[in-house]
Length: 394
Image (cartoon, rainbow, N blue to C red):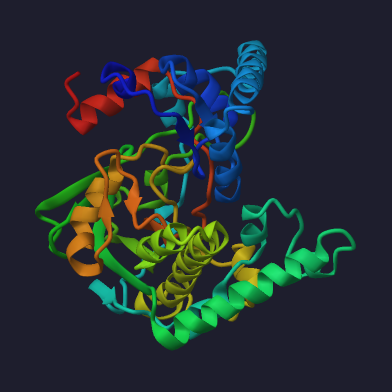
C-alpha cells in the first residue's frame, strides 16, 4: 500500500519462510498496480527478474501471474475453517494445564547474557541440515539420499561439493563470520503475557513478552499459548526464559554483491544459501549448548545431528514471526533485551526483518511439556485484547 501511495513502478518480489502464494494473492497483490511476484526460493529470483525485464516475455509472464492469482483467490474464498472459532475467554479456559506443583523450574547454570563472536565454522558445519539447501535450488529429496537419486543425484552432488568447498574457504579465510548472543532471565507468566524481571528478587518488571493463543474449538488438546510453558506468577515458582539471536552472514551481502557485479549470479546465490545454512546450524548448536551447559536442564543429552533435526530434545526455541508467535514486533523486545545490535552487528529493519538475512532469533523454553504449535487465525476479541496489552491505541 505504501509503495502504491508513493507512486512506485518497480515490480515487487515477495519471499521468505513466512510468506506464501496465497498470502501474496489475497493480501498483497491487489494493493499494488505493478507486478507482484511470489518467489518460493532465492534460486528462482533470477528467472523471475529475467522475465520481468524481457520485452518478449514480460507481457505473457504477467498475464499468467494474474490468472494464477485469480485462481488462488478463488480457492481461498471457498475454503472453510477446519474448526469453529471460540471466544478468547473460552480459549483461555482450555489452556495447557501443567502441574506446576510437581515441577521445579531449573535455574540456568550461567545466568545473564553471553556473546559469541566469530563462532567456529568448523564447529557449525557439523550441525548443518542440508535438505533445505537443496530445496533452494528446487532439488527435492532428503539429504544424504538425494546424492544418490537417479535423476537429480549428480547435480545435487555437484552442488554439495561446491558448497563444502565454499565452507572450506570461509573456515580458512574468514570471509564471512558467525556472531550470536543468548541470555537467560527471571520470568513468570501472567495470563497470555510473560513478565521478565530485572533480577532474581522479581520485584521489578524489566519488560513483558506478549503472546497469542490458539482460538478454535478442539475436541481434545489445549488451546496453546507460549505463556502456558512458563510458571504462572500466582504459582510462586520462580521460572526463567531464554532468548537468542544468531547470524551466519556477517559479510555475506558484500560478497554476494561482488559476485553479482561480476555477473556471477550462481555464486551470489550459493554464498547466500550457505550463509543461511550456517545461521540455522548456529541456532541448532547454540540451543544444544544451552540445554547441556549454559542453562543445563539436559546435561546428559547425547543426540545425533539427525536427532537434533528431528527435535528429539527437551524444550523449544520458537521464533517471532513463526506459527507459535506470529507477531513480528516482539523481535524488537528481544533485540532490546539482549542488546543484539551492539553485541553482534545484527539489526532489524523498520518492518522487523533481520539483517543480515541469514539470521535466526527466538525464545528458549525449558519445560518438558513445551511444544511447537500454530496460533493460526484469531478473532476480533483477541486482536483487541492483544492491541491493548501492547499499548497500541489505533
